[in-house]
Length: 109
Image 1 (cartoon, rainbow, N blue to C red):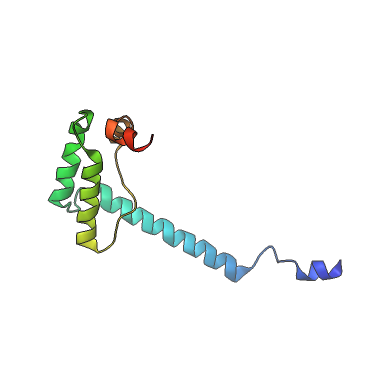
Image 2 (image 1 turned 90 degrees about the vertical axis):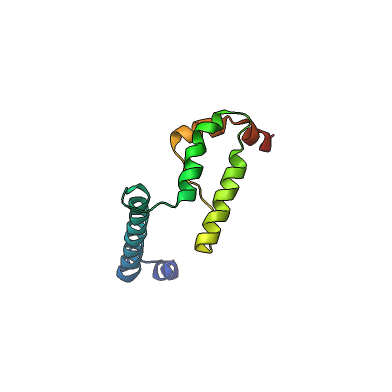
């Protein structure tokens, strides 16, 4: 029993706890900077991004192809950054339209 008590982890370790707290604060600060860059009007947005964004109104049509548009957007992002994006930021309006789009529904039988 005494061996269990001696081997038990301490509930507080100042170095480990401080590192964890600072790491979390840094990650939150990075997320905040990214969101500021996305929503700040003074940030330059590539014309290709604006063209893809303007197509949202066309997604109500069954003949539109949001999957192709997203693929083209990923390719453009990869060409510009050298990194393949793995997340997509869309508005709630686009989410509602895409959720019921026939080409997206067809991919998930």
